[in-house]
Image: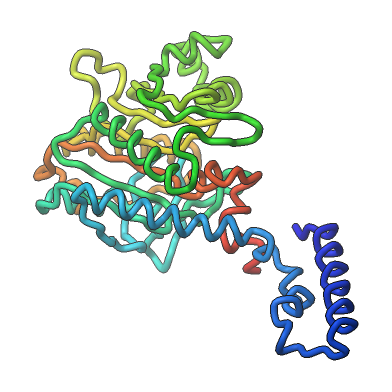
Length: 349
């Protein structure tokens, strides 16, 4: 929305400056006052005019992310945005595009690159998901995704921590982040909390009960997430196996998966796990997800056969998907995700 009080203030200030200049010099030249004239132009009615500093910092943050990975010997890759078959996950809906789909993440193609012999890769790309719009959601968003052969989710936690600390330093917040009147310390090590412990600590019911009542996501969003990472970042880890379609299960406890999410100031920033590399098991999970989608009246997707075939050659690895728009929102102390992107869907109509 346009900040009309600010527009009026800028307009009035501009007129005063012009009047003062005329009285002092007995003349007035548009050419000699381009910056002040610009304030009077229609640009002041654009939302983008008032988020300029956020967009400048956004560019610096994206550059910092690339620098971090290049310095750590990662290869930046690009994969197709339009694909024949997305991963059939229950709660993620892909946007159709000419008989194929816009990817919801670059995961499937990036794992095929792991199989082809690329052990350390990253990508910053646009992704698309239907029916996602809100203060923290956009149907088209920027995602950072990276993979490391030979690592588990435990090494990924350490690397994720270093990445955020590095980027926060570039954004001028090396030791702590100020967000919505909170001060979140970034000093290592960051906190660890299992999903089961989070339910015991912050919810009225247990994780087991939430799963049985099909209320896991509801309880997470309403009761647990707002309590996470408000003093110190926290890795929420060891998710239920049923909530982790592409993650490896823990060898000593197959009821949970080697998956974590990072929370800072109640914001979920990333989703990471030790990757499943068993193509037979992955197919079974995809089939289960397809059955759930069918039961829920959702579109069924083609099975991603090329990905499943390549999975047989994929090395043990960890992967992470981090929402760049949310990270930038956090580091700019913005009120909404709308305040850190140049365009929102409503402006394109």
